[in-house]
Amino acid sequence: DAGVTQSPTHLIKTRGQQVTLRCSPKSGHDTVSWYQQALGQGPQFIFQYYEEEERQRGNFPDRFSGHQFPNYSSELNVNALLLGDSALYLCASSIQTGANNSPLHFGNGTRLTVT
Amino acid sequence: GENVEQHPSTLSVQEGDSAVIKCTYSDSASNYFPWYKQELGKRPQLIIDIRSNVGEKKDQRIAVTLNKTAKHFSLHITETQPEDSAVYFCAATVSGSARQLTFGSGTQLTVLP
Image (cartoon, rainbow over all chains, first blue to last red; front, side, top):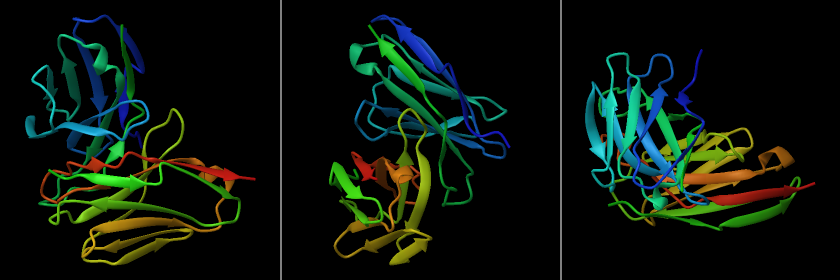
């Protein structure tokens, strides 16, 4: 049973560039959430996708955008990269069951470094 | 929005002793409280969670307690082992808000052999 998979594992970009991160949810999961984890901090919620739509969004600028595909996989796009965007980006999947989602299962993350 | 504070930021205990990590939250509507363990370079892994209709939950050496009136919840690890060494995060959310978790800042637990 495959868990949450993310690619790439590491990425180095230059300020001003754009980046796309990818996530495949755990088998049977239909909801994908993205979190940003700065060094030494707890993860911060970016947004969540369900039925190919953004359902909830945290306090992140419009430079952060996403997409969910019919197979439930998801992409996180960040435009006009800033040095402060350097972080571990975590994808988490769950099952939407009425008002109560199942617990989140996290991937290993993509370590993004902006120079 | 929700704000979660976590203490202590670092905790060292002797193997076999107990460890307690405490969190407070601000949104009285929050009703789901998971705890995650994150080893260095690895993914956060859910170790236990509790809903607001329950005051305590146990799973072997791990327990979580919740005080809704005071808006705080705690993680208790008994008979600690070196493999318990990791960063522990508490989180809170309002079910129905699509599991938008607000995390604490983490506790680095070190179990000394």
